[in-house]
Amino acid sequence: MTIDTNTVVSMTEANQNFSKVTKVVDKYGRAVVFKNNVPRYLVIDFSIADKAENATNEDVLASSSKLMDMYDEAFKELTK
Image (tube, rainbow, N blue to C red; front, top):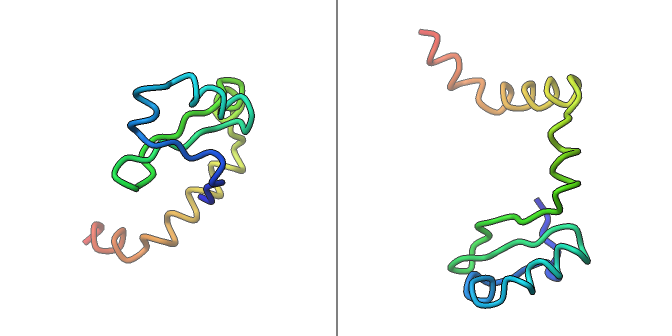
């Protein structure tokens, strides 16, 4: 996932000023909260999350196929 630097908020800042996180989400659609300089949490607009829940069968099949290809060796080992 590519992270827009405009959407990054530190954990400390999120704890002390959550309204800043909501302003970032209102402006960009999401905010990424970093903890120990690592992206840890993704805060997204609820309407975007609601749309994401309605993945099509094609989306699910494409994701499944990609995962199967990525972990083909592990799946083969598990079937032994």
